[in-house]
Length: 589
Image (cartoon, rainbow, N blue to C red):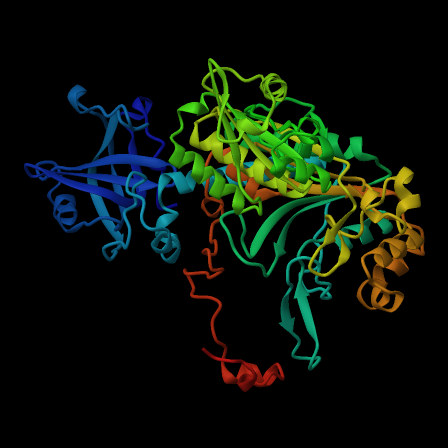
């Protein structure tokens, strides 16, 4: 080895030892002829002292040294003078008096500072990711990722799960997001796809008798990017045979607990509470509720049916709802900010936001004149309103009311600083609708995917009233972030074909796209269910950071571009010919 210790190892117990360190130069300081070099590696920093009175040769070398050069330093560990002790460094009580300094490699002036207090523009960070990853916070993130992954593997292995790798070149079966496709050189005109998830293959593993499977699976989705999305992300993917929902919940809870403990020494309480989809929508407006704060939705629909305010009454008459929020202390918000909240809900298709201030004398607003004193008192009581509060209302279809108020609730919590720090609220959301109506295509779509078993009591409505059918679906939500989804799967060919019919897939199309799965079911498929945790999202929560890209070693930017290697890129003309694709078919900008 070129070193005897890492740069984070040395302590007072090592005083008097001869050591050799290797690392990058974090800083160089010349104090009256004596040169001090802070040498850094993944494990920490150590101070190296080059004194011309003690070793002229190492001092001469030190005079040339610049930041980010890679050095080897040999010397004796000495105690620092009392006035020079650095309490902010783990090695701050000692230093290495150098008697040999070797330059292992030089470095250009770095494009960004290797300093957590001076974080560069994100595009610069991603272009020079190999420099950005040298920062201590990024090294910490890599360690969190490793420790959590190892803990997950150990935990699942202890329960008898087998880690099985599923194919990365698969048949294209686009559902939801677009597939990334890979042209085949050997089969002209045919393509592989990169898997959006291992869904079908893990079901085949259950048919194969594997019984308990998992993997940390890369998943590829060609979709528009946003802060919590990447073209490639990692799932903790698992599947189990002969189980019901509670069995899956128990295993997943253990996985999350192990990851939190190994990643950040955080203990999460088990079991996680459960909430139905409908309860989540009714109380929080969203199927991924943030339960760290209150301000739940309040239903005024029954109080509005016969009121004199036509906006409310007409919404109820048309089958809609009137719901709202009580913003505690919100009466102090200026009119301009209240109007901004009205613009906010319009993003979610609400027509506007009505409001009432709560004062010592009652409710005040331009709309209170349309309500009787009894109606206003009923609104005040249901809102549990106190002087100084602000009541806001949305009247529209149930879907628009829920979404607009749900997102407004989250927005207000951040704006008013209602979210406590260091709190991890995990909750299961269950009993999702199996299907979702698409207004644009005028047909039913799977709420999650088409391989979910319908609830037995809802099977009679599969064709007569698909919107009434609930699936054996479940999501895990952490602090308003969906960590993952799962379900008890369909394991019978006849039920799978019936579900496919509901979403508009005829027998020929089902055979073309999923024939291999349907054939497998004909040979005896066990009841099975599973779950997939978004590993990168989970790590972001564990590390307490907002940007998921900081938890991925080499991420893509918001446009889906890898700046470190400038991909996607053009390919050589010879590759076009080998793949039997005509370059002139690509429209160039």
